Length: 435
Ligand code: HAM
Image (cartoon, rainbow, N blue to C red; front, side):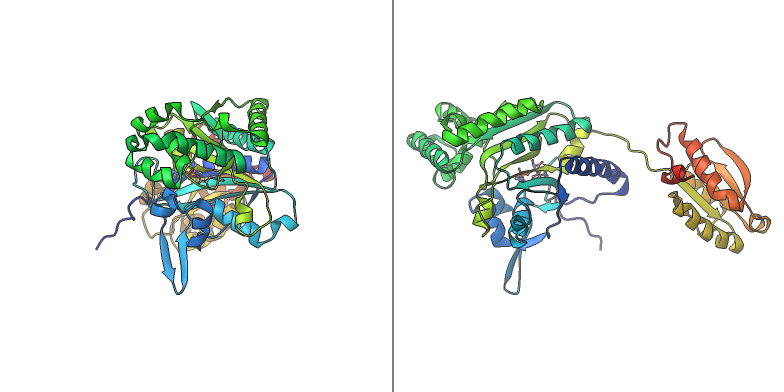
């Protein structure tokens, strides 16, 4: 019997992962440059954590969570990272140690959505969360960080959309005005929007139905309904985005699908990668009420998460060369014993070594070394072992020379560096600078 991966969940094979590693490293570098430290919350959390924070009437909670019951515990595979980080922030009384906290995280999330390009059931997010800073400088800085990262990765046609949905009074006033506007025309709205009118009217603003969007043309607007501090916060955010050099547009219909947002919400989209409706690479916003709702003090918070698969699709087909590789090819028992210690010495110097200890012919071992993209092969047969030498083959230049065993490590490092000079292996082995 053969098994296949669960629908919407992908195997990530080593070749593909090279580009993933590049993206993850670029994200971690930017996160650190912006003062974030890594946080790793568990993948399983109490289901109620997500119900309370994301909101009972959201698609994520109503339709998309993978839940399980074990004993008397109801658990869910995390559909996102914000709720788990917030739970941990409260649980560990982080506020008592520092007034402002910056955390980043990276890992798999699970949502039972209909799989398509850029939308999966297990997908990876990299996210950042800031606690204890009410913004709007922090809001603008987070958005600017995303833009920096995407530019550095060479992603084109970026579009930054921002909005503010207010908080407290201006939010409830807006909600009332929207319901008042939509109620007389409710019968013309799509079925989904009719349901939302009662339970979650703000979500009607980002309805995918053209007819709904036409009906919304005269509706009150989020940003123009902002008052007092909410207005000032949003105006400063826009000014600060200018200061950070981030081109953006205000989208008064942007509300996002998670209920915890207050004030700032944003998205970064790209037309690259044929992502269609899945072109939102990263999204986030402020959630100033969540920490208190989860039993902590009233601490303002903001964050974003980007979908790694989507970012990779918009980076296009890029070839990331493997690190330089040395193939160590022993023949016979004595050669194999020497090769074992030579492998250790090479690895001590930071050289990536594939030791081919199979009982195969030299020809087949060389074919495999070639297939692996090794720049250099070291051959040690029993006669070499007796003479205390090793054959160094530069597989790119097709040259071969004999070298004393005690110089083999240094000579291999040199040869690998030379073999990279033809542009095939851009980086020399890490240990080259160690002498
Ligand atoms: P979200 O908008 O649900 O926000 O997801 C953020 C990003 O994750 C999306 O823009 C997308 O790139 C990616 N994503 C979401 N669902 C899928 C999927 N099924 N397949 C592939 N990629 C997907 C959040 O998750 C919030 N926690 C963001 C946040 C952090 N807000 C404040 N802090």
